[in-house]
Structure formats: structure tokens, C-alpha cells
Image 1 (cartoon, rainbow, N blue to C red):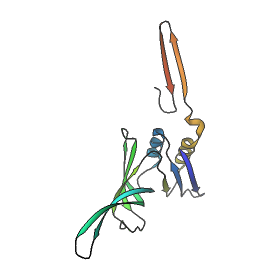
Image 2: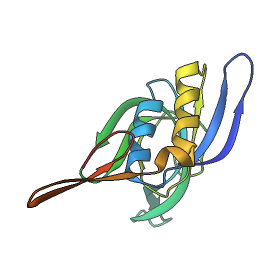
Image 3: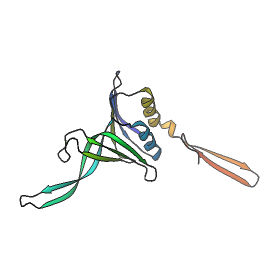
Image 4: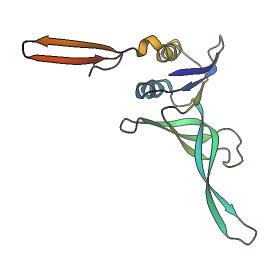
Length: 158
């Protein structure tokens, strides 16, 4: 995971801006984000436009929203994190308090703001952004007529 910005004061409140670079980073993001946190990310919203004649058209608009997280869902197949919550910042396309679902994906920047960062969450950010933690170890276990190749990462063995 790539750390773009980090500002956490002594009281524990603050924000970080991260870019998940691989599927394991999405797992770290899932464990970092909790209900009540605010997340800011780019998203697509369907917007209804009404003309002066009364006819309405809809278009899809890319915008940046900040939501207060109410529900967190991790899709392991698509390696995507879905965050449902209410919009908490004024936006020209989305009203304050309107529900929206943000899809966090690999290589898509997001900002996480917590009212209180605990030491475990800060340690997880440091661990996820440490390039030495992402180094894989390969082991070859050999015996007569058979060899097993194992890839070992911080959270799984293949």
C-alpha cells in the first residue's frame, strides 16, 4: 500500500490518504475502516437532469464524495471494498445526508478520517505501507521423486 498523506495529531484524530496496490492491501483497508469513520473517494453517481420542458434525462457523473461509513462489505472475489453511508460534505450532484455506496478498488486513492486513531490502527497503516513486509519468501521442499514449491507472504502460504 502506498501512503500519500498522513496527519494524526497527539489527541488521536486525523486522516490518512492511501492507495492500495495489491489484493492484500484491500484486506488491510477492510481492517482499518470501521463504522463511524469518514471515507473520501472518487465515485460515479447517476444524476437526473430536468429540462425546462419537463422532460428528464439521466447521466453518469464522476465525482468525489465523503461518506460517514455505516456498512462495510469485503468482496473477496472482486477484491473490492463496498462502503455504504451518508454523504457528509456538500456536493453539486449529491445532497447532504443522501445514501451512497463507495467502491474501493486496487490502485484507487481514498482518504480515511477517524475521530480517534488507536495504536493498533496506526501500526496497521505502517505495516501495510512498509515495503519490506510485502517481500515474499519462496521455499522448495524436496524429497525423492517429489518437490513442493511454497510461496509465503505475511498473511498466507500458497
